[in-house]
Length: 281
Image 1 (cartoon, rainbow, N blue to C red):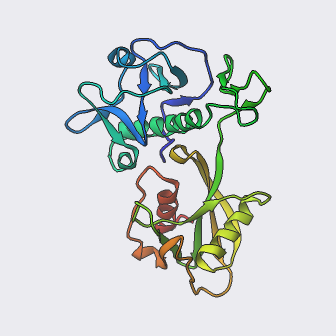
Image 2: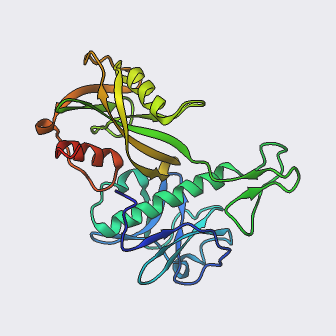
């Protein structure tokens, strides 16, 4: 999956660092990131390449450790419209670019975008409207007037593999840019466990009851600020699907032999479909 970058290691410990010339800078504009584009590859800009085009609003966000440690900083102020020989690459296009090194870059960009959105959405205190300031010793915004402390928000969501013997329920979203196959999914709501979220979402989206709910694996979902928890469960009773047309364009049972997609190495959804297709669950 996207976070599997071994032998490199992701270190999200906050440190009050200043950018050096060879540190990498994440610059976002809407839902696009500034990159170098080569014939068949992309790379993030280094500080030495952009320092004359950005202001001083750079914040250390994390490092990737390995043979050589790489530090990453985020521009959270006004972004430049363009920088020579670089382009803004839409995040929606990134997951379709292949290559192990690019998968690591996509993980970096998604995680940085999560923090970019947090900084962008938290400029003023929600309690007293005072401008927030950055903590010097942890990843936290604080209000010097009323004392409010604000940390990055992470929204829990579930990915659900509903099985019916040798079949799995796959769907397509309604009204979204992504038109491929997916598993049922949804956000946890106030006062419910993740297992209850699984039961509710399957009933709401497909009109089915489920049992034997088993946790599989989790994945950070940085673009939308999520933590995704994957569950498999079994159909309980009637297999007639009744879809919520506001959420889904279609939903059908697929036998292992008829599943039309493979694990893409990026998403929890595709890995779960892959392990079922290959009879590993």
